[in-house]
Each structure stands twice: as structure tokens, then as C-alpha cells.
Amino acid sequence: MKHKNDLEKFNNLIESFSNLPTIGKKTAIRLAYYICINNQLEGMKLAHNIENALRFIKPCQQCGSLSENELCGICTDEERNKDTLCIVETPKDILIIEESKSYQGLYFVLDGLDNEKILKLEEMILKQNSKELIFALPHSINSDATIFFIEDKFKKLNLKFSKIAQGIPSGVNLENVDTISLNKAIQYRTKIEI
Ligand SMILES: [Zn+2]
Picture (cartoon, rainbow, N blue to C red):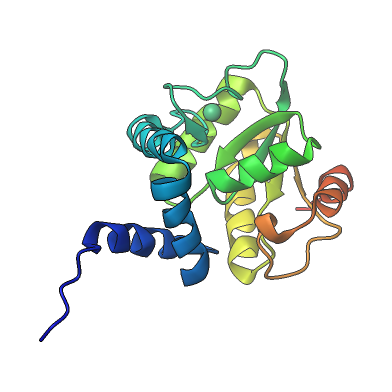
């Protein structure tokens, strides 16, 4: 006789946890047990926060960073240095650079390069009157091609181009770089000659 599984919902929760990055089956069981048995209030809060985050977080209309409004907190922060625009691959990279506290300028999320992105980038450069584009992309042939393409596209705008340098090994994403290396990489960025 087939044993009836009366823990279907609990097992679904375990499965959802174990589908998340960095969470293995054992941790998934511990988390599910914790929020269903040990701390149901925390479980309710978690459910509420996930639902709210999913509902309200969207890309900033100007830079593509994560935001709960049309424009993100960085774009609307008057204290930020408007002269520099740091080009990153994903919104996650912004969170990481912000965590390192090594950069005070604005950002632009590339997230794939197409005509619409180029137009958005140009719009932002002109609107903010940017003086320098800093490329904080992972080292790869693809990134080199992207940098070359963007420089070529905007050479008439009289911008300075640089890219973060030291401490970023090739093929490594920003999220796997420690804060000190990232700090140095931004501080000692190198000018790109064209
Ligand atoms: Zn923004």
C-alpha cells in the first residue's frame, strides 16, 4: 500500500527553499522547520516581505538599479557626484559596490546591450552632464567588445573612459570579489586610451 504523504505543503516549502541559490536540502529542511515550528511569527513576516518585495521592486527608470519608485534612491540623491557614471552588468553589482563604500557617483545597468539601452545611456549622460564613464564589468572578451562599442558610440561627447582594474581576476563576477579588492579596483581605475 502506498504511504499517504500528509506533508505535501511542508515538502513544497522545503523544495522552494532548496531551489534558492546556496541553499542545500539540509538547510532547506532546517529553514522550513524553523519557520513552521520554532518561529511562526518570523515565518509570517518572511512571507509578507517576499510578497511585498516581489510586488514593489522594479528597475529605476533612469539607471536600471532596483527601486520602489520611478527613480531610485541613488539617482535622486543630491549628494552623489554627478560627474561619474559607473557602468555595471546587473543591479546586483550596484548593491555590492555600494556595500564597499568606495564610490560616490551614479550608476547605469547594462544588462544586455541593445539600441534601447544605448539611447537610455545617452539620455542619462546628457541629463546628468557626466564627465567620466567607469566600466565595472567582469573581465571578458564580451566586456571588452562592449566597452569598445560604447566608447565608439559616445566619442563625440568628450567623456573620460576608465575601467576598474586591480584585484579583479578575469572571469570573476563582482559579487565574488572581496570589499578591499573592489575598493582598490575603483580607486586605481585605469584610463582607457582611444
Ligand atoms: Zn536610478
